[in-house]
Image (cartoon, rainbow, N blue to C red):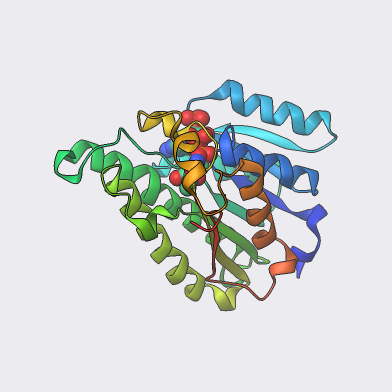
Length: 254
Ligand code: NAP
């Protein structure tokens, strides 16, 4: 399988400029992947990740695209085809949340924004990846990892039930797509992080959330983005060659 040859692997990391995505891009590049670092708005961070990869002798490209729209996804994957070569790996990492509140305070616009970023985006990117990787379309296979969340199990009451539900949808997609393409050379798995030290918590209005909750977690701390990147890279790698449709909870026992 071509997947065995990491030196030949081309990876797209959506939302790769910051947090878990940035850690994943850096670790993957260190393991020989040519990496597309997708970003939506924070160009400076994405360029910094690319600079670090290139300085270490790797190959990377920052690609601006809002992955919740068809045009953005087409632009992203066409650029990768042109600049990096045949796609073999996708990490559906881009995601967002909004200010903590109760479900009865949510409005339609917010729900549509959350569904667009956390559900439509991964669906559109997975579709673009399958059209390139699947043996059904003449591809040579590949691997997809969806970055879900422990929230899909916990429901995030009084914080963001909308976010939790969007990650529930991503869990269903992981299962369904993994079965659709299992015989077409593509593995589809999910990593479900717990509380990780990234900037996403500021969007919820509580930048210090991990420090507040961390001591009460089974392992007594929040996680680091690099710890999630390790789980993602494992599922992408040939070491996970017989694993598809799996959920790897990287949540410190949460
Ligand atoms: P983060 O630091 O806020 O990074 C999120 C990234 O997603 C940013 O790079 C952002 O791009 C990108 N993004 C958001 N919407 C996008 C869109 N429509 N198109 C393209 N890029 C988009 O958050 P993070 O914590 O690393 O989160 C990464 C993933 O892990 C998310 O799916 C999140 O739900 C999941 N997760 C995080 C935690 C946690 O505790 N941190 C726990 C469980 C799951 P820009 O920088 O350009 O805006």
